[in-house]
Length: 396
Image (cartoon, rainbow, N blue to C red):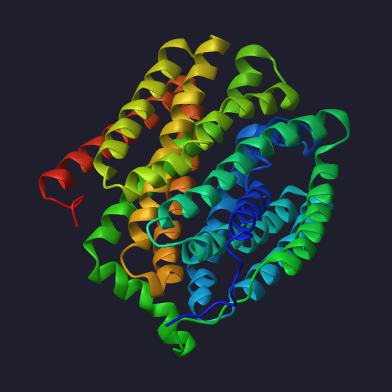
């Protein structure tokens, strides 16, 4: 049974909100490159299609970090784990900013992804600190911060790259990590491990959990699809904006503002799950994502259609992702670190799959290929939801 140094009830909302803000700042590290791809390609003298591997490599690094590091949240003091990963991310960001070639940039991106797992430690940590019956809302608050960080990263990246350079962006992000590490060191409560297993047993236990819990398998698969849809658009949109409208990283970054509204839905989704309305959340999110990609396909040459589609897509992702996490955290409160490891590994493998698939589709048949990719994933998610509902898997 875990015990945590008490946090005064009056301070608890502030601590959870700080966790959400920290999750956003760290989560942004994984996504800064997306609006910068045309500029990075131009600077380094390679094709945009070649440098588009950077988001996928970073996503893969993140997935590996989740698989190896996140289970440690059940065995190592959480505050120490968060601070350690943030410091490593800080060093890797400097490596990206000083990278002399695409190869070094990709290698540094791999380490940035692997070290940017603090948000996924903070999410179950927030659920643990929350009063009974509000775990989903607390986890949703942190998730809202993650999604806002993902989207604001595009605005920040586009602005800094347009006014200074894309290299300066990564150096500045490293400095932000240094400040954040100090703030969290002062503010976060300490915790005690919930497990005392050998390291090998701890790292293997997520596989056993995946086999044991049907609910975990369901939401890991839905998370894969949600992330694939999200990244199918966001990993290719900057290239589309440049090719279709001639817009650079600054304008591409501004499109991230449209998605912020969607990120605010995550706490609402957590509350809905706490009240037993999980099936409604997944139906609404699946339909919204499908409509978004149909709009991208039909009206991809109209900026207003793209903006409206972003609102729908990011709203769908915020709803589904928060619902997925709230559901898996309820399986076993003492093993949330490893449960989240399984889920988030699947989520970010889905992101890498969506990135790679959409990039290949764009290179083959253009923007319509991205729309077809996303719409197909949304249909699969809706079919999965329907089958799971008939089997009663949302009622357990």
